[in-house]
Image 1 (spheres, rainbow over the protein chains, first blue to last red):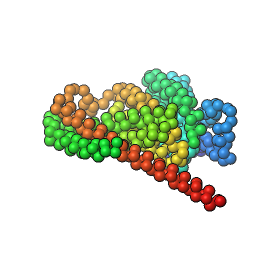
Image 2 (cartoon, each protein chain N blue to C red):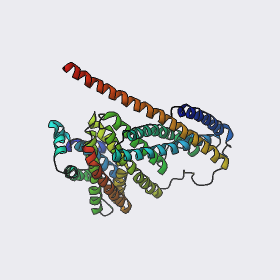
Image 3 (cartoon, one colour):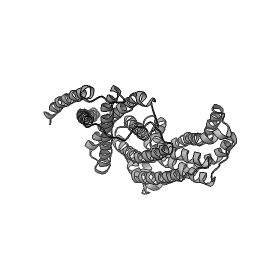
Image 4 (cartoon, each protein chain N blue to C red):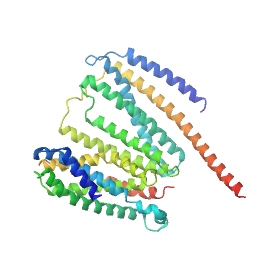
Length: 196
Length: 230
């Protein structure tokens, strides 16, 4: 998965050979597309272990609340994807000669909120696509349309910070998105887990 | 009920032909855009009908999640299918209209983008229904429908902010509409809604029959297996 996102970064930097000024304009999009693809690869593995030996059925009959299972899975994915991002970001900075004109700590906020948005929806939809035929294709089909506003917010916030413009609106939008979708995923997860 | 169906069918056919005549001949020609503007009478009613159907889908999904009635699931399925068809009509007629009037096929305007995202969400909804195993489909699809409907305001807000920062000169919104045009528009909308309702109705009957047949088959094979075991 790490290697996969490394490939995405390298292929992107071959495809565009930007100057420092241009790369500021496009880097926000490239970074998040690379992370998105990497996250999908990671998320597809979320429930892969549970398929063997009917572990999901064991979860269903266990007295543990379904939401703690969901939160644990989400947190696990979140840590996983965050580590990946932490490793990829220096590469991006080096390849695209990036230097933020705005406050760099805001990028951290955007990264945390954006990753959470991808991961919380991704874990939920991975649990859904688990029940379908051709499940590995199903996850991005479900995840991408729903994530469009979040992706737009992440990309716009990153680009705004890199160019030294205000990103307050996008961060608030992203935080609201996170809040709403985390709540709804928690409300619906038990239903989805027990769907028969 | 059974007698109402053909009556509604005939009524819809009359309404549709009257609306077609009104849209092509009856409505006054728009001053600046000319005859191209007549596509408006298909574009806007389709959009309204599609939005209503998606709203029905959301309501039926919530109802299914709380009350677990199979009928609500069929309504959700049917409204999503027909809604996607109408939404496709909107997305196809939009560029055809935009090209001669704005000079471009597409712009990332608020309404266009929201409609496109809506279309994507409901196509993925139909994909999920198609590819999940039958027993779980209603629940999974209803959960997705709820999430998808929640996504719509976010799309709208984000695009609104996105585009108000970089204003596009192309949207010719605002202004008033000729009352005769409004009249034709509403007639078309009525006709389209009747048509959508008719299609949904027949699709609903088809789907419930299909499910009955499936259940009968399952029961038969179950009984057959028991019989041979004996």
